[in-house]
Image (cartoon, rainbow, N blue to C red; front, side, top):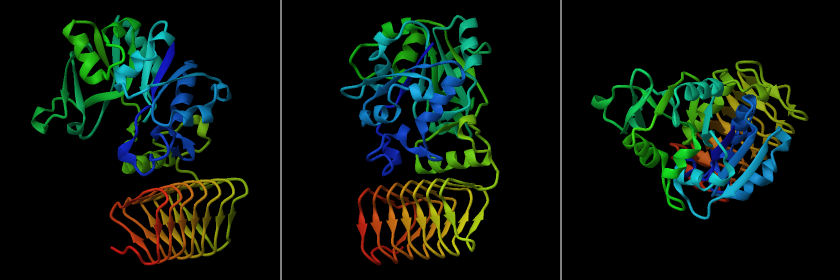
Length: 370
């Protein structure tokens, strides 16, 4: 079976992290999000991968190449313009030769693919949708099924008085090749508003496969942080990562930690970092490779990507620093704030209340205080 992974979106809700990087390539515990999906597919013997790209397509191929490093065969198909979720699959139709699986590139999941494929085949389905329960289904589209799991209808972003199920579309589908005959070529066309309703109208066997597996759509900075914490806490445990949730700090090769520094809780610090005197890093927290943290700085509940330089007496809490950020000293970054690539922030700036600073920004001393 072949897998099509949809990785063409711009990830606007995750800006500034996605200004220069496609969302599936942003690091999650220092490894691109997409790599988790690729390992997951390989675990179930799915090795032929088609990546449907559009936004910065070259980033994927330059990192993964032909896939052989991961024991996979990867084919890249770039859209000339966005074609929607289903239009993107129609665009790769010539590479498909039978039953196939479609996955969204911004979803982290432990879904049992073997069970889902078996469910699909035993029911004679032309399409099967992964269904996952959520606490607040009003923010999503509900999928209503009968007692056998056959899809009856869809309800987009219902009010609470319309909610009769907590099951939503989890963004993974198993499909028969014949369903693509219903998809107009070269047009923007979605699964949710196009193909799936068309299958229902024609009374084709479309099923929903419910699962309590771990599921996280990484669409916002808050969800991005939460995905990190779920890995560090052991709620989601990808075996290839080599990090056991809830364990003592993980320190990479060549990382120096001053004896007076305090590393508390579940913390991952990658290779070649320097942690200065009287620094406190309180987990959950993740630091990428080549970072430097100056004396008396506190980092708590935050993700810091590669090659960041943090000066003395800074405070970073519940926030994200993208790669190459430089904080010169006595800078506060708090409250789900996000600092984009290669920003230079001089001392005595306070960034709070989910502020977002776009890549390459230069803030002079004392420019911002909330």
